[in-house]
View 1 (spheres, rainbow, N blue to C red):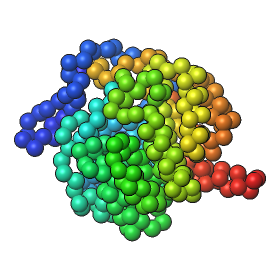
View 2 (cartoon, rainbow, N blue to C red; view 1 turned 180 degrees about the vertical axis):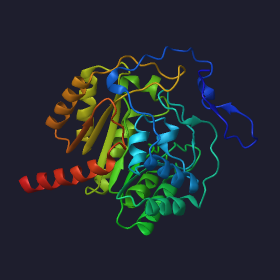
View 3 (cartoon, one colour; view 1 turned 90 degrees about the horizontal axis):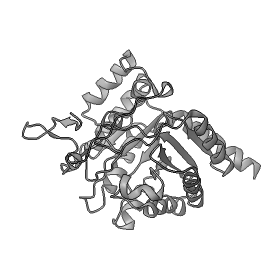
View 4 (cartoon, rainbow, N blue to C red; view 1 turned 30 degrees about the horizontal axis):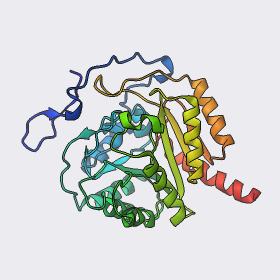
Length: 323
């Protein structure tokens, strides 16, 4: 069956994971090229991370978004926590996170996340969330509470957040998240403006770009990060324009990865982008002035985030020294 079934239903009945996609025509799932093949997860480190995540009742985007890097990351105790539940109010054509009506926020979640981060001994943690358009502030206060809880439980851990766009929410909401002072503020543009209507219909390209710009305006010391997927039908010139837009907004770190189609009901892959093209994108992005660039078929927002944060800090120090 093309539609993934989610059994997490308060009535115990099965329901479609993506109800909005059930009537969409099915598209073929292209065979992955050799450079996109990864080993199935199952190492002792992977199992230990899984036990901690489940023991604290946490949700991870690694699982919900079917990330291809889950085996590698979890084996190193690197898991990206997904807060505010596992049900999203948006229905992006590329995303495998379940769509529907979310539950109420759990006030114990910030403390549970902080405790899990401390027990896992993480030097760097990435926190993301579903979109919560149902909440007055889009979940901003809850996001900030999670950052502060991690600071309290594990003071030595650096914190990276990957946030929603807070579309049509008060400016004060995004300010509250910025003022929680994460080390890295990430918000993904996801694709080029031309494809937003079909790929990211609930979002607006320039709203997302403005969010990243506001972070730098309010706190220039925070690192900002954003990413896009390729293989959706974008042109090279469009990708380069997105790079320019990010740099105009002061984005420090860009990630570029291959789009992988979760099911036959999701947006179809236009093509698999060759590693050589990713290398070319990396060189172009560096020439445009990004402090950090990660561009490869398996690049994802939080893949190697800890190592990349150390490189990001070093790049800023080198830039400041040269100024």
